[in-house]
Length: 340
Image (cartoon, rainbow, N blue to C red; front, side, top):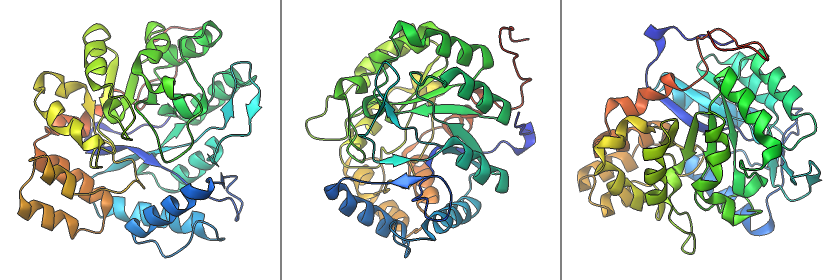
């Protein structure tokens, strides 16, 4: 298991994507639909990357930029996310996904850069899901990440119960996308509803609702109020504030800032490489015009996202509280055993 001493636990960006095309052996693939290719190009331009996602060398250039910006920011660590393929409920792989980032690649990158912490992605319908979960626990996974609406995962299905129970037993938190998604294809938009996460919560898993269940597109439902109602019932339910410096999701920022009673259940993430746009918190009245100009001039988007949220008034606990949720520094739990 990965251990991070308490004295080294500073602010964390707990929602950072690893991306690759696999042309140099990473095992990744990247196949965005036609219109999404233009979105991918735009996102990389926003990062200042000069290496196209279509060419060999992209995987290495992406990691180099990420690590450099993390080291130049006030944050001490970032949680690096794998990305699973899509399956139906019976465990049959579906040819509808647009990207793959294998768990092994995440572990390899994190082994080279100790400020990066590995978060795996495992579809619970896979025939080998339990075996893969055990393997990832042994290798030091700190979190598990999935996009239910894009990867077709309804945690309430009875056949997934043992998977969630093992995660709960091992203390592995579940970061689940909530709210609409328009960067990668959705399979079942209804699974963006945080109420579909109740199966994992009932099994005792600590669940983090990514993006605080805000809407991404004009036609997407906004589930933030639903999420806050759920948090009253489920003490293991948390939310991250990643990707909230975007046009529509930014509507959630003032609503969350007005609810300090829930700030201890919020954690910080950037959703890197998603763009960070200071104009939107300014339009929401959360930062000054001077702050907007200052942060817009900062090319490091990891630093920019962190600084904007600090300026808005989110407390320090939002940036460090995830250490209480990640699987770090505790003894491993043997299969079938009980936490000590």
